[in-house]
Length: 277
Image 1 (cartoon, helix red, strand yellow):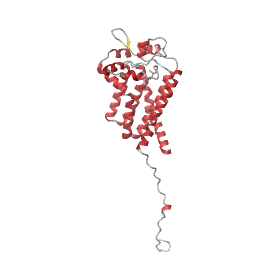
Image 2 (cartoon, one colour; image 1 turned 180 degrees about the horizontal axis):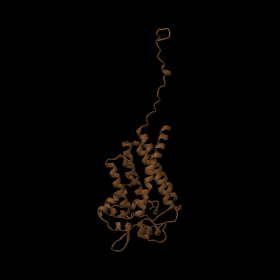
Image 3 (cartoon, rainbow, N blue to C red; image 1 turned 30 degrees about the horizontal axis):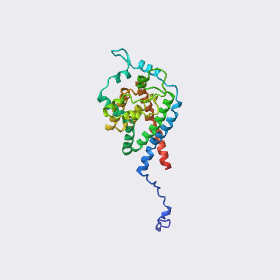
Image 4 (tube, rainbow, N blue to C red; image 1 turned 60 degrees about the vertical axis):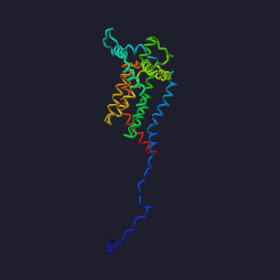
């Protein structure tokens, strides 16, 4: 209604004058998966670079780490005080050989399998896991270079003297699983090891702990399944003579800060990448 009392119809706005929201084209799920999995590929590339840095590692710790383990985790036995990491592997059983062997071989498959599950269940958490995984690996490999440490099986074979730098890697207790299967699975796998002196921290335990922490907020059976796997991994590392108790604790402690703070940094990186895409 105009001021003169006459009614003047309002002409509709032209289509060009209407501000329409700009819709970003949805990314194909396969591309999103590759984006979220990219830290895993980066981790593989970094590991190849780490292999070249192994000759630059510091002084190898053999006797001092063994002595500290025996002092800190000594338990009474009929033969006198012994380190817990020596007592546990002394009581072997075929069932334990299978359980621990399977657990040890699944250490990477669990990470990738859970990552794939998270892509469909809680997609952003997949990137949280993969991003934290590569950062944790970089920290762990750095510690291996700064503090190279001999595993228990090395002491069993070579003793506590000066480090044998060209010592061949060994499957240790996993050889019992090879015997049960009749296949040199573990022997072939560990023959390709890049570094014998990478016992501290245990990245096997760090991986399992990281996954359990990432999945824990989701609740359900998966929560307790990953926790049980992490516990089994900790026991397996000691039972199979691949790690001391100290190595296991160090692996768990390594994973926790990356499980807590990694997702915050991963979220920022993910949003930045998606905004630029």
